[in-house]
Amino acid sequence: LDRSTREIELGLEYGTPTMNLAGQSLKFENGQWVAESGSFTGDRREMQRLRKRNQQLEEENNLLRLKVDILLDMLSETTAESHLMEKELEELKNRSRRRR
Image (cartoon, rainbow, N blue to C red; front, side, top):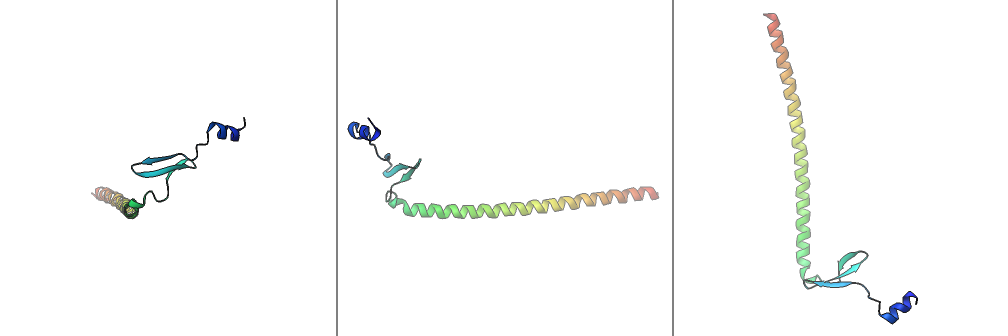
């Protein structure tokens, strides 16, 4: 039997896999579980709130990364200045010792 005949005679046409999880209908399409249209209507506000909160957290994270970069630059600059000052001080000490 060819495939289409087997499906008809043996009832092997299953269609799209679906499931109901916590009152929300999901279907398996293109290798992923997706919500069937209208199944998340009660949670639409919650989804919008979570998306907005996620965006706020991403923006805050970006700002914090920028601040860390600035602080690291400041630390590098201060460290370099400190090393230069230590070197100058050492040179002055050496000059002072030679004069004695």
